Image (cartoon, rainbow, N blue to C red; front, side, top):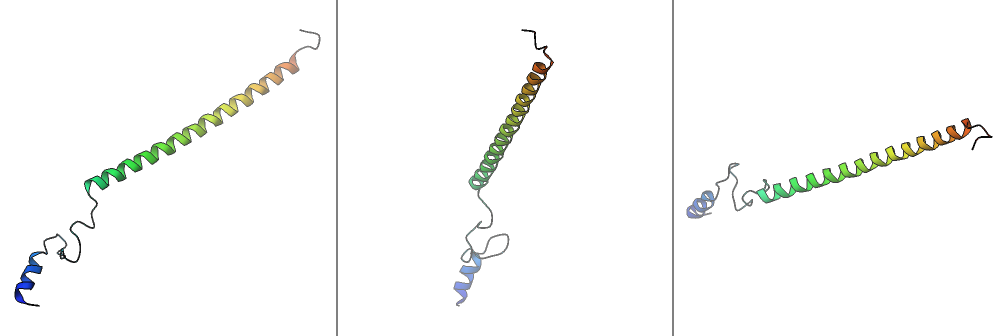
Length: 86
């Protein structure tokens, strides 16, 4: 390698980790602001989807228990009625 080539290649080495731009693209190890925003958006969206599904599950369980309790109360009320009453 000639001295001028060495100077040119060493001048290209400007990153914090002191790696050469010819070997590794600049900022290859760090995501861009757009990528960070996309990751944050997707993470938030997935968490909201999971919360929605979990909320639907809790709502359906509560409705099921309510309907079960209502049918038990109806049966108990029918059993307590005197047979001659209307």
